[in-house]
Image 1 (cartoon, rainbow, N blue to C red):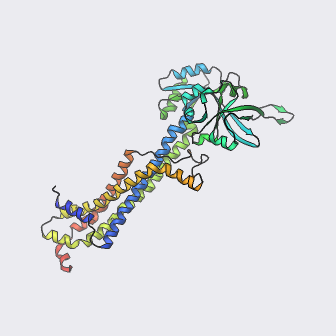
Image 2 (cartoon, rainbow, N blue to C red):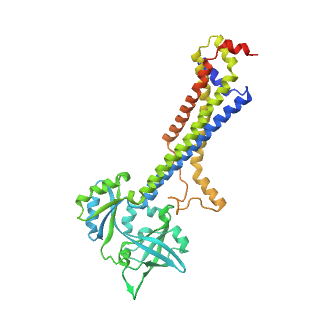
Image 3 (cartoon, rainbow, N blue to C red):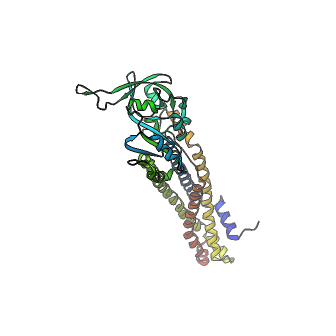
Length: 415
């Protein structure tokens, strides 16, 4: 196969093992630095994409996309559910009751948010049924004294499916002398779920009838939660329902409860990516040092090639191509390592946690209890393209210097 002379010589110089040891060392260091930066950037982007995906797929699949509320609660909730479900952009709607409570067994206690739901409707709106590790979410009695705990809560309380625990509701106006007296109810643990998200810290599910009973709400519910077709348009879809709803009602979307977490993930992705991009840029411009040393080492060859008739433009292309060979080796190696790390980062972190018997990601601090990764082809293409583009820029000055060498000056002092 025929190659232009500048390409052939650039490839030969870029892959040759002989030459100045210092030049070879600098070339390897430049390629290694570029590979490290590319690998880190791909890994970081994959992890941040993973957090973003888990936020959408798991966390926001466990909480309502939007809710319809009224200051005094909603008694005519079947009508509100019917209005919401008539919208083509609403997948489903369901009533709910939320109460602050304390679960107790023996000398152990856990503060929770009691979420009263109709099991069949809740299973259609969220992925809670898919996260069940014990019991059956749908089999809760409509008005039974039952609760579904998270695995984390069950471990803290030391309870199992089938056991009975105390549900303590804070006092709300009932007085015994001058003291407020909390109300205590008994409930059976009907099941245990594990979403491995921050939801596990506080969410406890219970049948809607039981929640209305202990909250003394009668037929009233606190609101109607809805699931929409477009998560990012949940606020707009919910507000479009207002004209059809009874007077006095208002809507809220997930951005109010989890918007800060979503924005924090997006901001972290941008900032961390910028920092790692700077590492890639520094590594790419290390090629300048390596190429200047290469030009100095090969100036005798350049002078001879010029006397043989090789044009200055060909000399320029020769060293540009050589620099690109270094950049290509570093970029391809970095991309391969970055993809490999991203594919295995979840299992690697879990293995390290098992080895050290320590959990790095705790749901009290992080949105999920594991390190997710989501590899996207467009990110890999962007990182590799950027690395090669920066390498190309870094080679232009040394290549231009090489093309401006004067053969007579070089050969005069060449021994």
